[in-house]
Image (cartoon, rainbow, N blue to C red; front, side):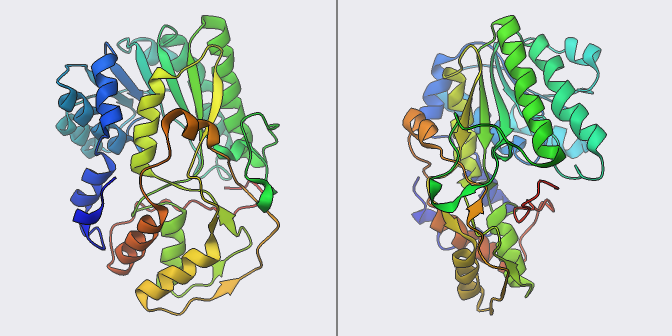
Amino acid sequence: MTTEDLGESIQTTEQLDELLSRPSEAVVDLFKRIEGPLAIVGGGGKIGPSLVSMACRARDAAGTDQEIVVVDIFPDPAVSERIAQLGAKAIKCDLLDPDAVGALPMAPNVIYMAGMKFGTTGNPALTWAVNGMLPAYVARHYRDANIVAFSTGCVYNLVPVNSGGSVESDPIEPMGEYSNSCVARERVLEYCSQRYDTPMLLVRLNYAVEMRYGVIWDIAQAVHDGEPVDVTMGYFNAIWQGDVNAAVLRMLEHTTQPATPINLTGPELLSVREIATRCGEIMSKPVTFTGKEADTALLSNSTKAHEMLGLPQMPTKQVIDWTARWVAAGGQSLGKPTHFQTRDGKY
């Protein structure tokens, strides 16, 4: 990805949204090959609109006419209006109602994004319903489609920092209500894949970042506010949200039956301390730390995805610098902290 034209900072949300949704040649080529509508279920959240925008832009660049349908509860009408402006069709649906899901228009290609994380500790029943029941309704309805489903690296346990990260064949040993509910989501989808012969990929994403949210934003905001940066969870993986969008769309051509998991993150082992220090340099602010780096962290090894699709295009160093400048300038936040410091699974 060429970033020279963007300069040292991204200054507007319009500029950011354009970059997050800019399709690569590989994504444009994808839309020359796939046929029929694309349904993006749960596409109204923090990640969805940029993925929808990339899909619409790639379709248009490919000169094809696939219908892109975005299904969500859409509590904020402005989001569904934006979806329509992007060139997709927004369908309001109570995804926890199996009859409502059963009435959705069919599609041969599905990206499944629905899930719940924030507030898990305070509302475990809803978390389990969203992450454990809802996938069955959607997978049963779209049983004849290719399905790429979002999961999370939180299904793994902490691993030694020098281990290279968890790989897809490692045991699933989650901590806490949220992580266990995410295992339930995967198992339900696996069952549906087996029962209905549905090709699927389960994308274990570990941490998407852009200027308005993500681990790098959390660190930069702490530095900006003069708060001590907790380095106990001293290391993490991350991937630019635009690279996530491109990868997930391209994975529609790599689904398997039965369903298989695939890790999706960047190749680097990122240091919380080093990123905080860099943010302090950019902001001209002192940085203080609390805690000491533990020998373990929540880390994923994404070699399998990189072999399939190539390495992410956006340099992480660029994202760090952009984010620090964005936060220093008072740029918009999505108000959704990652709680990356959590080591007991209680989000």
